[in-house]
Image (tube, rainbow, N blue to C red):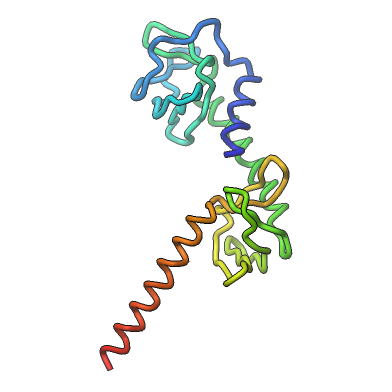
Length: 181
């Protein structure tokens, strides 16, 4: 969420915008850089955002960042430059997340519901104490939102669904173990 908005802002600020919106900006089209080399393939076009898969990243770019070249849609940076920009933004977002991911930090869900408090962080394993139970999550499941709050990248409904599935699996496993006695 936040990463996509950061990428769009940074790329627009880097001067990618061209005078005219390219006609060939469509899913499956190859995007070319200023030297005519392939930058990536368009995976999605929605709401003014074009997602380009560089092979390393899925880069959300503003639709007005594309021009039309002889080979197809173009942008004014190379694949290496685009990947570097995204690497830097991802590193900054991860550093911000890691600084906020500490014991006693409050955690909200992706749909802005209170989830609980970080109980412990050991490597990439994070335990969040919720209202009903402790949740075992991974570091990659967290981010920091625009307000600076630590969020888990799941909605409350997704978390409840996963907990229900886990409970059902545990109960099914118990029933199977008891039936074999």
